[in-house]
Image 1 (cartoon, rainbow, N blue to C red):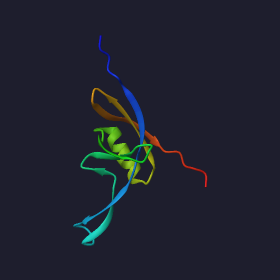
Image 2: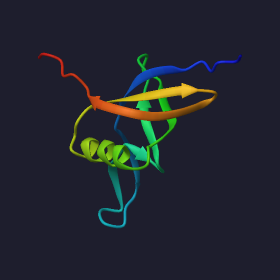
Image 3: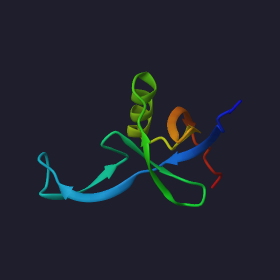
Image 4: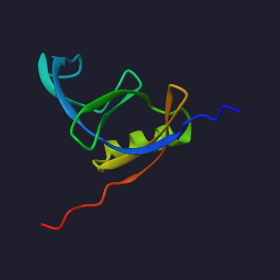
Amino acid sequence: MDVPNVSRNEYQLVSRFASFYRTDGPESDLVQVNIDDGFLNLMTNDGVAKDDVKLPEGDIGKQIQADFDEGKDLLVTIISAMNEEAAISYKEAPRGNN
């Protein structure tokens, strides 16, 4: 019997800045982009960008977007199996002591 290999990883949801034209402000402005066309902008533990996981539909997707918009640093849990990936949960990232 074949059994799928399932992995579970946490990635940091990151913000990045892109310069583009806006209709509601200055002609060119730096705008924070965290979810691009429905895909999460994530970062692996070794600092590599990962932009191929969709923002989940429903309540969890709305909660991720709302918490990130509030400025919270988030860790998103991604489950992978059979060449498919999906965000299944998230939590606020721990803050370091300064």
